Length: 172
Image (cartoon, rainbow, N blue to C red; front, side, top):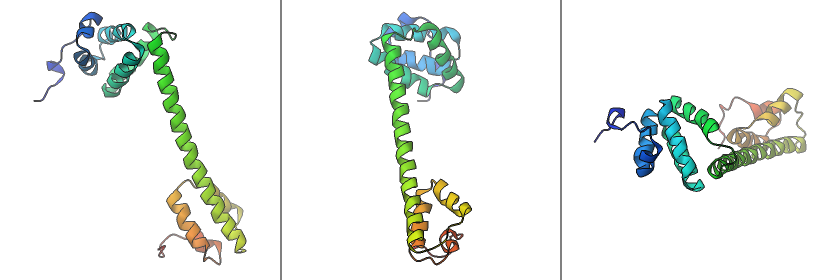
């Protein structure tokens, strides 16, 4: 069965939405661009337990069309005080997700920096001069696969060009 926006009711009453949360979410996904739908949904969330409200909001906003998503985000800031339990839970989840993303990005940057340092250490050990431009190219590279290729090449290189070449030679 294919269902489009015309088949989903436009719910504008938080009490109607509370009676059927799935239909409420679908209504917001299909009609969340209408201010009265967004407002009713946000008011519904204020009456739900914090964890349920944050989960329902997250699920619904992720599935909503971009213009509905923007309106929901704006409506939240108008109708829900920051100190409400579900808003605090929502902010905490967002903050935690942001922190985890930052940690992962930091780990990736750390791996790349370590790999770049290894390339430079091998070149130094082998007595290969690394001009400033190539040094910067190595230290600013974030592509772990490429850094691994450079490290393998550095083990047998006699010149910096042997390491940073165009990659047409075999790297196996």
